[in-house]
Structures are given as structure tokens and as C-alpha cells.
Image (tube, rainbow, N blue to C red; front, side):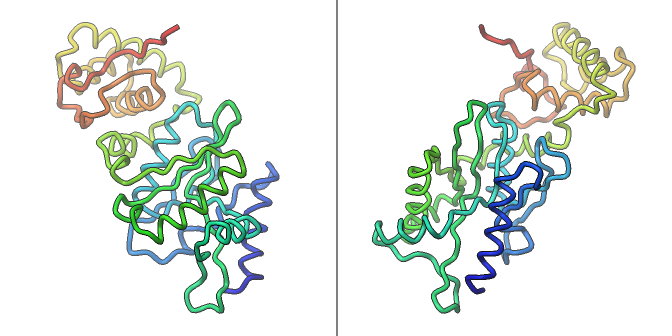
Length: 266
């Protein structure tokens, strides 16, 4: 790797951030990184045709949490910190700036796993690390560079560890993700189904969730699989609530899963 090649990558990345007509281009892509861990390409939660490049299972779980958060309107993965920032920051902190292995001290552009935009326009960064890795001195030095950059750019900084992400909720969100949107042609059918599901739920909330789904499907005139997809969509979009600490097993009673209508609090 040389500085010119890295610079070209950075320019492409930066242009995609500055111009809306250009699809976002993460600094690192799945195919750029050698790793024995889980790497994932997954559809962006709102932009058609955009693919998220996630470099670990922890990044996938962090992304799902961000995607399901109604306060988040956009998220950028593998967000690059300009060398014009990171090199002076490293010098000021008194730490060695990361370089490419085997290079003539070519500095590596540092990236933040996720930088997201909230609905109020503020930004928040989420570096994601294994709990044990986050405590290593060298990792702490790299994270200090990221945190200092965020402070300079008025970006909130929230380090998130594997312990926080390895939850039953993360597993449930992963299963729900492909059901998060309703086909526009089925929106009316979804509303009819949801009303019928709530009626069936109120009749006997201690019945198995699968049985309640089956009755709601029959009343609504849709297949069971479609009703299940509607159910996951309703949970993802907070039309229904559940106990996120429980594994979403439909053979369990709806009451055990904490399934109930989402009630807006004034």
C-alpha cells in the first residue's frame, strides 16, 4: 500500500459523503479485509440498492441496533478519519499512529466502525470492540485517536463492546431484519391483520403466539407465513411490543413473550 493509492480510496469515500447523488462508499469493504471472522453484506435499512459492509458479528449486531432505532436516520460504516486529523492527534496524544505492516511507515487511515446521524441532526460514533480487545493498551491508543477526532468534529462518542451486543435482542433483530418493511401493495392488508391480531391477542394472550398468529391469518385472509412476516415487521417498527430479553419462540405463550400493543405516551 502506498499513500497515493490510499488517498484515492479516501477521495472516493469522502465524495460519497459530500454529494447525495453518489451512493455512500465505505472506506473499507468486506472484500478488502482479510479476516477469519464473520463478514457480512446486508441491505441498508432505508436506501434502496445500498449495501452495508460489516466486518464482524459485533458490527452486524451494532448495525441492527442502529437500524431499529427510530432516532437514527442514517448510518455510515467504515467512516474514515482524514490523516490531516489523525496524525496531529496521535502526536498530541504521544502515541504511535498505526502504519501498514511491511510498509515504509505508510500511515493507515483510521476508521470508525459507525458514524450515525440522529433525527435532530446531531452525529454519534460507535466504535465496536471485543470486551477483551478494548482493554489492550494498543487498542486504547487507537480508540483515543478516534475519540479525540470526534471531540474536534462535535460527534458524540459511544464505545460499544461485545458484551453489550451479545444479547437475545440482537439475535431477534437479526431474524426480523428481512421483514422490517411491508410491500407498499400490502400496507392495507398489514393494518387489517394488525387489528385482527390485537383482537385475537386480547381474547387469550396466554395462548401460544403461533396459535394467535394462525387465527389472525385466517380472519385476515392471508397465509400464515405472511401473518408471521407482518408480526415481525410490527415488532421491528414498534407497532407491537415484546420482552426483548426473551427468545422469540412462537410456540411460547404470547404473555410469556410480553407481546402487547405499543401505546404512545403523551
